Image (cartoon, rainbow, N blue to C red; front, side, top):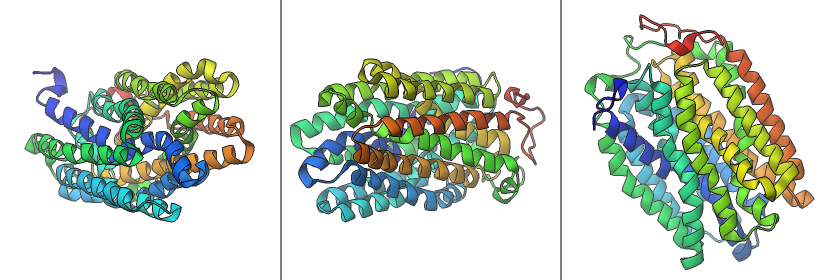
Length: 413
């Protein structure tokens, strides 16, 4: 199939990235935990807050290893790092199934899985997309990251169905098998990129900043705060949607089905937002997306199950856009020279917020008996991230860029 513009000859690259992102560690473990919580509660007597701490520890491990994964990607290529990490992640899941029984072992294995699977995250798997596209980068990232959005649809339903038929351990093993099957697809697909696009990003000919140069700019640290705030605001709500809906009276399959709307809407959101990013200032697009997410959280807080489907759709649009926005803003403001290292930091901070949030929300729910206060805090964090986007309205060419013409979205917001 021949695609127009920059998409010509890159359909295999886009498809393999989408598959890898859908089967990768962060997508599958984040979207599955809420569905696993009732089974783990019932078998081991663990609280929701204690179970959610596993994701917190997982993202702490991503936080400390993310920049290193980005540097490995810059040096050895996304094909090698991504494929190896998918297999390693699957082996970690098998170990979890074989040894789970103590909450402390459960926590430790989630952290180990993160270290093994960090290369199956967007830190690595969006790198070839950001390098291979320029004028249509927003749409390309949106297409590739639909894979992670689709995980929000298929993962809760797969886990719920397999758990009901064969137990939660079989559901974990199903996720591991899918990761292993995806590894060769990522390896061959990423190697389909033309050789000229696989040049070492640290070469002087590649435009943009080094990681050290980026860290000396205010934009780098502002984006860091935004990364944490939007992840902390949205992450816990998305992870806890299934138990939240069950608290409100939905049966297990209905709760999983409603929560899966997050994944479907994220696909639509990613494609639509990708198109908007290629045409309008990224900061303004980001502000609008996060404002819709704040509305979705407010609907859950004040209208509950009655507006659950609409809330899930609005949250999905934002959850689908978060990683796209970070990847796009990193390339826009800092260029490609050490993109892996710079984006690795931003994504690591994002993952930290995403991991702390489910634990905090779980503890708040355990203490109060409902999610009311937790939803208020989440909504405020998302609103803060939206307002801070205004600080990125002046979108400039990255220092050291060798492009002759600035991208359309480099206009001031």
